[in-house]
Each structure stands twice: as structure tokens, then as C-alpha cells.
Image (cartoon, rainbow, N blue to C red; front, side):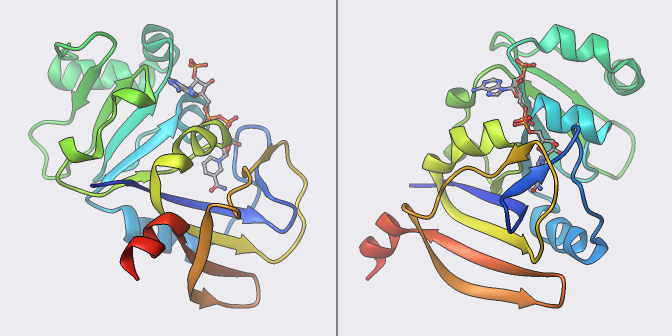
Length: 196
Ligand SMILES: NC(=O)c1ccc[n+]([C@@H]2O[C@H](COP(=O)([O-])OP(=O)(O)OC[C@H]3O[C@@H](n4cnc5c(N)ncnc54)[C@H](OP(=O)(O)O)[C@@H]3O)[C@@H](O)[C@H]2O)c1
């Protein structure tokens, strides 16, 4: 059975966000995020998408919102442009829109879903990375096989926190460590039991 994977960065006091943004700037960690997600599917909540202000290039961006039309109207600089590219094709399933940039090599696409439950990893050939924010991590972690977590080695002020996960996941690998942060790979405990 195919699962989601989650990728996140949190501080020692579990902060992941402040005022709709990520409250640190670590280019090396962003490179890691890019390497892991490039060519794959990234799933994020509406607030995270609005905080970024644009889709992640060369990836399928799946944005979750209960109010797709409101999101589209709130970001004319993105969706206006996407409408021009393709005419904002409306797909069969309700509240699922698909915009893509045609005529260019880069495969940047945005899908808008109104429910996480509609997303089935089996339906997609690539890995699906759950990319936040807190609401989406909380909902999706029970369906994730792996968690790639960057731990920033300091306390940071913020208003959004990574949910508890330690009881269900076990650290299997420390991928990287430097003075500022470490990257840890966790795997769902129930899957580890199956694998042994
Ligand atoms: N450090 C990191 O790794 C990291 C990663 C990502 C984000 N962040 C930070 O996290 C913060 C945002 O997190 P957040 O928890 O406030 O917001 P969020 O999870 O990004 O987005 C929440 C929104 O997603 C939609 N949503 C949630 N559950 C849904 C469901 N089951 N079905 C359909 N739509 C659903 C709702 O949109 P509607 O209200 O439109 O219905 C909800 O308001 C920002 O500061 C961001 O920078 C940090």
C-alpha cells in the first residue's frame, strides 16, 4: 500500500511558522527540501500556499481549501495568469481545479482539493509529500509512512507548531547535521514492525 511522506522543519520548541511564514532562512535546508520534492507532488494547506504566494516550480502543487473559489479570487496574480495559460480547466470532480502552464518545459501545476480524504497516493505515480502547515500535518501524518524532519537547533518565536508524532514514528536515520540544524528521517512504527 502506498502512503504519503511528510517533510517539515521545526525549532526546538516545535515552531514551524510565524505570521504565515517560516521564521528562519536556511538556504541549505531549502535545497534539501527542493531535492526531495522536485518532480514530485507537494500537498499544502491554503495558508501555506498563500504565505508562499506562488506554486513551487517543477512540481505538482496540491492545495487544500474548503473554499476554492475564494482562494482563486484572492490570488489573481497567480490564478489570473494560470487562466490565461490554459483557461482554468474545470475537472469532473467537484471543487477540484487544475491549472497548468502549457508551452513551457517546466511542469508546474496547481490542483485545488477541498478534502484530504479525496487524495489517494495510489492514484499518483510519484511520491506525495505533505508539506504543511500545522493543520495539514495534523490531518495527514496518520497516513504518512515517512517523516523527514529538519530540527532547527534553537528556540524560535512563532504561532504555528508541529503536532505530536513521536508516539507513532521512530527515528531511523540522521541524514545530516551542522551547527544550525539536523535532518532526521522517521518511519511509522507499524511499518517497521511489518518490515522486520
Ligand atoms: N516549517 C515548515 O516546515 C512549514 C511548512 C509549511 C508551512 N509552514 C508554516 O505553517 C503556517 C501555516 O500553517 P497553518 O496550520 O496555519 O495553515 P495550513 O495548514 O497551511 O492551511 C490551513 C488551511 O488549509 C485548509 N484545510 C485544512 N484542512 C483541510 C481539509 N481537511 N480539507 C480541505 N482543506 C483543508 C483550510 O483552508 P480554508 O480556510 O481556505 O478552507 C485551512 O484554513 C505558516 O506560518 C507556514 O509558513 C511551515
